[in-house]
Length: 217
Image (cartoon, rainbow, N blue to C red; front, side, top):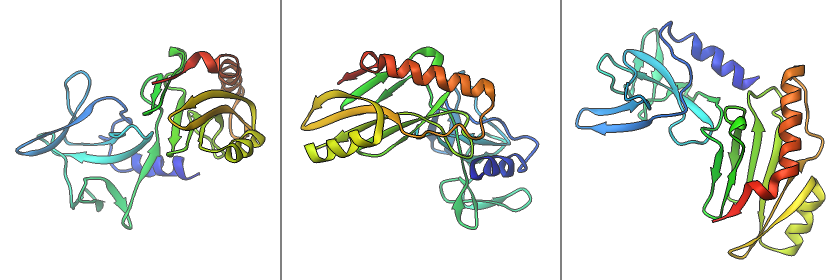
């Protein structure tokens, strides 16, 4: 599985490597870029997986003894970082999936406010016309919990409605229909009993409360 393989490769980088970080933010001064955690500390002389743009994909970065990002060089025993400081293998940025930071998902048109109990248990994949929410941690076949579609015509709307279960029309906003539901034939492969029970509860919760959780901006 690519996600777990990437994580395993990343852990081999250094005994100093830390766990993925989903909170905090990038800071720049005259000496370069560094990462500030929520508690005002910052990584030094270590590798760190960071999701700086909130897309639920973290890249791996190395910070020097002063805490500044290292870029466009080779670190340690031959680990290459690109001009953005991200670890690359054969020119490809290495990434791992990380959970979404928080329980509120926002776009220009709507907000979805999920229960606090969902925090750390899901990640998202988003395009201009579709938001997909998956259970975290991922398995070989990621388990989608729900999806929200934006469609601009009745024909598109009919096509979407045919392909998702427990669908509900959430409303009309800025010239588009919004439809949400549970994907058909979502797989449980790769998940244990405890994870399957959590997935079941999250799915049932969303089916019951999707209108309550969703609001237009």
